[in-house]
Image (cartoon, rainbow, N blue to C red):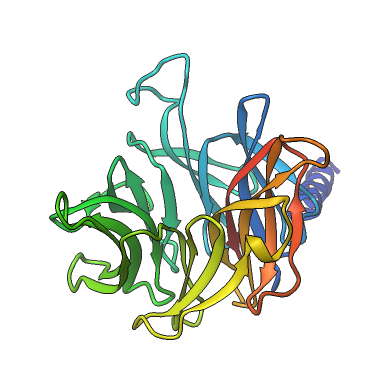
Length: 301
């Protein structure tokens, strides 16, 4: 009888977890950082913005491609150092069944490899990779470059796209590059002297890289630098939308998730909301707008 009750409790617990996180399907899960009254928290929600679940304190995060894990960085203000148990890069199970510190490093951005075995991250002005357990930390930022940002993996896990500055001090340019995951074969997709590149995201079919140009346009470009297209421009929406950031494709390649600053009606105050849009530029939708500031949306299957 006692064993029967235990089995019932296990089933009830499993059903509760399914209710909280839903069955993983084509729409998948989106993890993000929400800020309210200076408190930064990690959340997970359905791709349509429903069923938001708070996971815990974090300032940067990225969900794994299969939505089973989230890598995140958090900082303990009470200690002010990376050498403590509550500061560093962590990996947690999306059902809150485990939480492991994997590295005593700061992370400005995080990106999982497609198979979930490696993590790319930005530390200071460099980007690095490591195994999911924090071992084998390797710098991939090329020599002679500055301020590497927005590493994103190709869908086969063989390459990483990223942005960086080069040519300092006389011919300073910002470029979108690709590099093999082992640090070899650096390739320039394009560079620019005045058009900032942010929020880089590699399409699931491997043919296209999306990025945010000058913080007010979503643009796609082929990996060889051809066929540049503007998907969304703030100027074409309305005068309440500005400053785009944190871009990522949906697992099926049909949509993108990003953040946008929205000016409140009759006010100069702006809130940063999470939005989705179809890759043809249609179907713009706000899916998270209940907090003062949302950031780092990432989309798992």
